[in-house]
Image 1 (tube, rainbow, N blue to C red):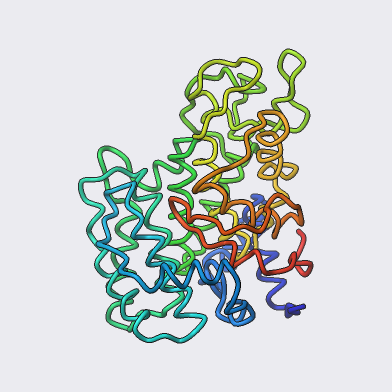
Image 2 (cartoon, rainbow, N blue to C red):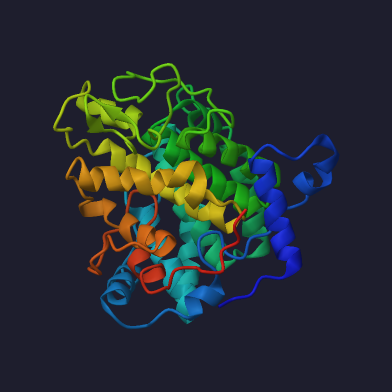
Length: 362
């Protein structure tokens, strides 16, 4: 078990207090200090403990050895991003220099390709390039250029929206994917204020309206309380005698108004892809997101399994190793998983790791 220093615990505690809105103006020094995270998604030390065998490793290695394709952040369906991430993970584990150069080329080639696209595509794709850059450690000149672009792209206007505005206005898969890339950028830049703001928005989406509630809602048919809409319905919520505890109302509405049995609406898994990616990065920054709003993320998956009878399939299955790792559950059957729209390869990165019992509770 990795032991935390008292300084580390204190830093994480300060971050979490900011997320809860309990630090006062006199605590500005803690809020403005640069954020330091050992691995945005996973650290090299953690990777060093992972096996170089098994189905998940073989799948990852196979993808890493083939050309990734041309980066295009404006193409929301292109999978170059997760293939670049595969190369970065294998390099970080094995030291393969050829893969590192391929990752560097892919990351730098992605710069500017967001033009002409939408924030949905940028939100889906950017996070993998940021994690890949963190894993391979860009050369100084490239790193400086990449950082400058990241600062700009957070507020780049794409068809009337920015990554920030999308995160803060769209309480569905658009917003969660935007939030995932936003927190990845903030973590890479060491921008404490940015990640604290993003954390407040995320907590508001999970259901804490005191933290944040300025979303633009669609149909409220699946909301537990139409006067107080949230991104994930609260504990114990029911409608017509049926549980809607854990429903993602602004994505479930895409299947139409409330009805039972509940329609199997895949937009909810798009939202969970962005939400879990946010949660992983925020948790590494010291926020206890897995417990927020009475384990809202876990309740969302349980509703889909138990009430909707709609477990994830295809490129959504990579969520399950994360759930099992952070919640000590048993949703994943151990089979290889496809990468998602934004990240992936969690069968190898998290499926082989034990539940983190040393996690600091706030």
